[in-house]
Length: 99
Image 1 (cartoon, one colour):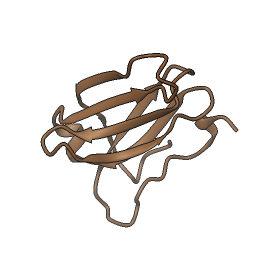
Image 2 (cartoon, helix red, strand yellow):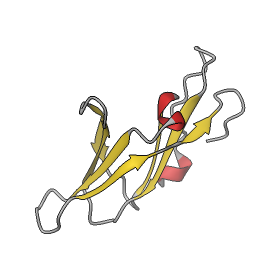
Image 3 (cartoon, rainbow, N blue to C red):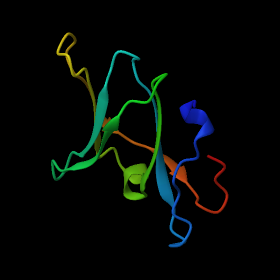
């Protein structure tokens, strides 16, 4: 199943805005990590789906400032990890989102 066909898990119970990460990872990448650059804590870690298209809903604070570090990893070690620092996500309104 294509990752675009899967709905993003959006929390509609809180009524709070969220942020949306949309990432087109290299198909050779096996995993990706999202790290809060202020705390150095991993906030999300998952396998890259077939086709490389990733969509993740995160707390709203990641839409306000570039406080996210995105790391794409090749488990075989054939390629170096790719890091994107200072990533600022798009706003996601849980009531009007069609993701």
